[in-house]
Length: 257
Image 1 (cartoon, rainbow, N blue to C red):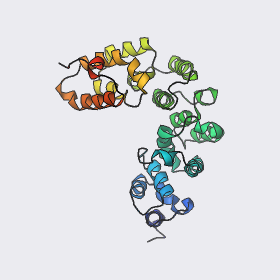
Image 2: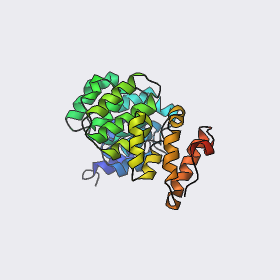
Image 3: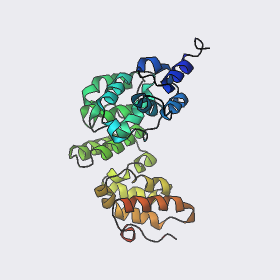
Image 4: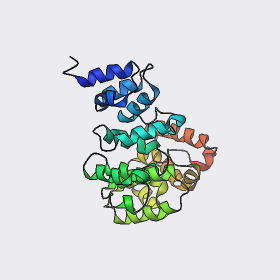
């Protein structure tokens, strides 16, 4: 059985506490098995963190784990690996700003060979020429802008790079809605006036920094004015986000109809 199903053998070893990434790598190619390992209490902490990223669970590793050089080394090994597609997509959401600059050549090669999503590679490399030419698809552009905005919210190089990408991007209103907090105000207002998916537009502000959230207060007020009872869950989530930032709810939102 083990010879026929090496991924199950690798998963069993990982759950049992194996710390050698090479030994458990076959299991990380399977997102379901990776998720099981990520939740296994006896798994090695580093293996559990890597498995969480391979399983598309970026919220599992805590801040000390994300800052651990051992995890950084493990993620470097996954660039170009078959398990790296999901892992790097997840890592881009939580990695320290500019983590991929030192690995730009490898990330670009992985993106060009189809082993890494271009948006994830660009997000990890950071804004600049090394990442810009990876981005042609609107969804990749939106993903990169969101990652850059959350990891370096006050970086003065990001707005210029963001504008260059938006100018070159194929038109996709829904993809642009996903990065509302980081759009130039005139573009953001135009989108808010025509957006169909109110919940998606409001949720776009979830990962934004407090200053960006505050800058978008007028946009949020317009969105909330068009909500109704079906959006109760969205409004509850927004209220929690506003409270977490210490912002008064009544200044952010008006009463929904």
